[in-house]
Length: 127
Image (cartoon, rainbow, N blue to C red; front, side, top):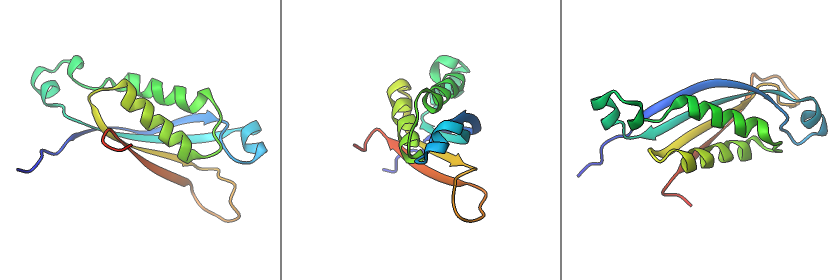
């Protein structure tokens, strides 16, 4: 029997100023970081009842994202994305998995590009 597809809640392009990076200047001067999250969950009861209690409160998800991005410095956006995913799974029991994308538009690379992005999947079934 095929498993039903999960519903998705997306928060896209949340922008924060923070101090992440390997270089000392990145950690001192800071830069803009962009974050997307996709929350994979079952929203059957929310659809039926139209009640916030049966869904994921995206205002609280945004607050969690902001807290993680701004509370400490990370060398790697991979670690930042992983932490966001882990914290989402800890706090929101309806979320079965999440896709987290962190972009660093001003990444110090020797070339021309719009942004550097990492995508991490946080899943309750993965260690």
